[in-house]
Image (cartoon, rainbow, N blue to C red; front, side, top):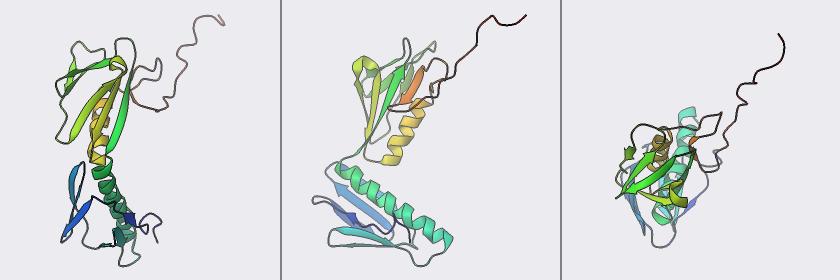
Length: 183
């Protein structure tokens, strides 16, 4: 049995769970998330806990079991506390500025790159424009937006400049060995 899939999800007070067939809507203090789940999975909501069961041990059902439970848990966490991703801008002249609700990336191009947040995503800035925080309720959307921003100028291995996730370890290369040596 899936170790993740068999764990019950505790739904805190102030969070409501509504079910319409395979579609679940979870509403909490930070908003509402809705998602449709595979009809094969048996999802029950009793006594403030969500539990996911699978019908048999086929390979496909084992894969869906843990995924369904993880998605439900992310929905509950999203409507209660939300998710954040921090992006660090490293390099001379690399920074991010606010333009209303948009982010303006200055990353060494001849032009600034403007990023408009999709519905449900909010940008905030720290350390004089060297850290961008992507916030939202949907974990998948937060990760996707952060990945899209990082792809504008991913960190390079020689000088380490670019946009990196906070805490990301960038493998550095030595570069050229220099002149000298044999004839």
